[in-house]
Length: 393
Image 1 (tube, one colour):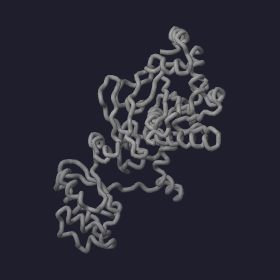
Image 2: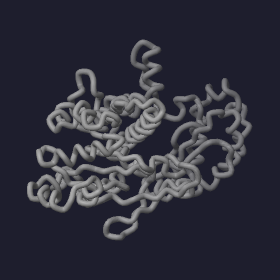
Image 3: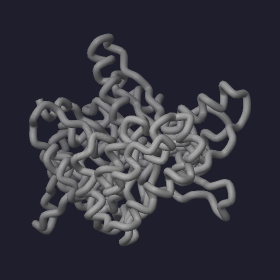
Image 4: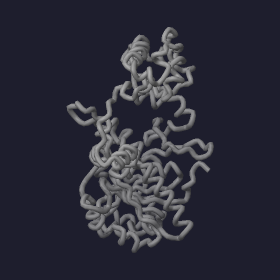
């Protein structure tokens, strides 16, 4: 069963990447996701990966939610859906009549899901927020990666970083709610905020601070700050980086030294016992740094490969997209776009059974309007009237 949500219909009224990406994950898992775009496509970014990834596998309809003529279409879609997915704040939902009460009036059994910035309760429930503010800055990640003497806070590693983490939480919540409705007959109301996901990602730091009764001291990010020369990132001769994560230095030091051509240090008593290692940590770090800095990135990878200690190359986006492990497990998948071209995209990280993930392309704005409306009972005359009124495209 590689598409466990086959037969589930999701109605998505959203623009933000965290909710749109959640819809894409649900589509990957087999759901029929109908995305409501504006008739003129306003708010949809220009074509490219930023559109292809979060909108893949969906069907798009152009519908003017604020128009009275569009209301019967919207209500019929709600009536036939299992999940209503939105990122609109409460005031906007009320204005468009897509708030919980209105949606449940039409379909009492629908699962209602909000992807918010800072939650649907509390003082900031109507405050605008995105991944950079709610997830990254307010959720603690920026502080965790900002050195004590830095001139600016650490930025997010890539566009959509927090959005994509939150999307998995939204999709997982929807799956749990579908199971719960089947088991109990009761539909859930879900809220997954970027702030809550940011706090969850940093839960160990947050929990430790709460236990300590105040802010934690800033960590020294150098490898030797942990008292272990085999933990941390080291620069190679050609400007790349290797990350070591060998948490038991006494166990892995001799092997590392042999692999990197430093047999003379392998059993040096200064580095083979915890107490003496602590006394000579700077020397140990220097040995590791010098050994790696003397070799190219490729050579370091080749030498470390047969070892038993944990390490990894620091990869850029191109290398991640061509990572053999991701490809072998089907986590880089191909999709044919609207022009017939083949594009590779990162797949969601959940692999069901041994099925090969098949990604559907992102739709053009309003591409499926007529098909979807015919499915839910609107005839040609009704479609013509809706087009004439500007309610659909």
